[in-house]
Length: 164
Image (cartoon, rainbow, N blue to C red; front, side, top):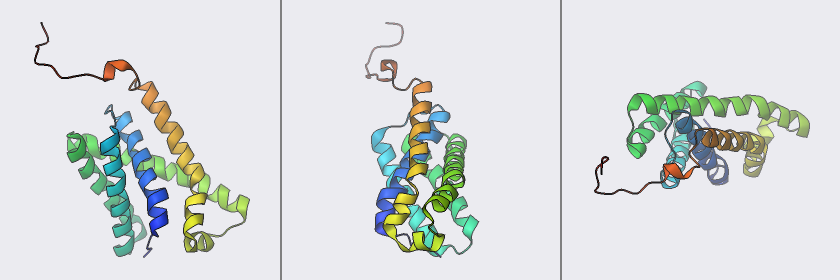
């Protein structure tokens, strides 16, 4: 169906995977960790590339990506599948919300058409910047509202029991 260029994978799909899943995890009270999120972003981009390349039904690739991301979250964060699936669905909701809100506005403001954007890898990245900024804003706000930025979430393991 749609072969995503490497530039769009690196500058759009990887950050989208990181940001959207940061939001999903944070809303599910799971603190995102940098290393796991980078791995997840790369897996997300690879899954998006493969699913868009080989699945011809437009909506089906979104379902496949969401289910794969939920499996990735389960293994990367060692959380239950139900929690991972809800986090992946929340991530999908925020990506879809960003696309619905900003892509038509950007296209009408710039006078571009979808075929032009899909034909140029850099335009693919530039047109989605407002959506990415929305994801950054929501990720920062949800992260701070959960209190993940506070020192109490950094801990060291010790051999002492809780009572000593």
